[in-house]
Length: 56
Image 1: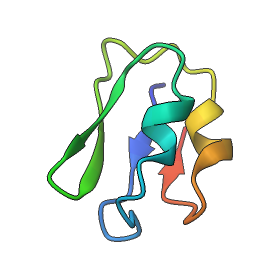
Image 2 (image 1 turned 90 degrees about the vertical axis):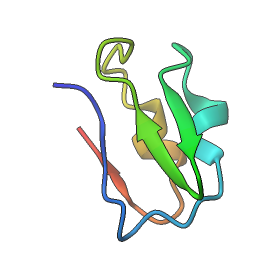
Image 3 (image 1 turned 135 degrees about the vertical axis):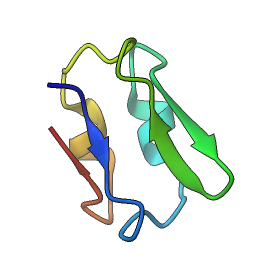
Image 4 (image 1 turned 60 degrees about the vertical axis):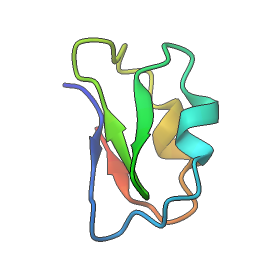
């Protein structure tokens, strides 16, 4: 299952964008957005998120 961003918890820091090896995360305004088709389900974004806003 691809990563999911909790928009209410996301602080818009972009750490997940930099951590994603597949380039599956982008910023949509001030919130992170995951492209589920590009996500390789590695969990790097979960570890990188300081707000705990991303889950698998």
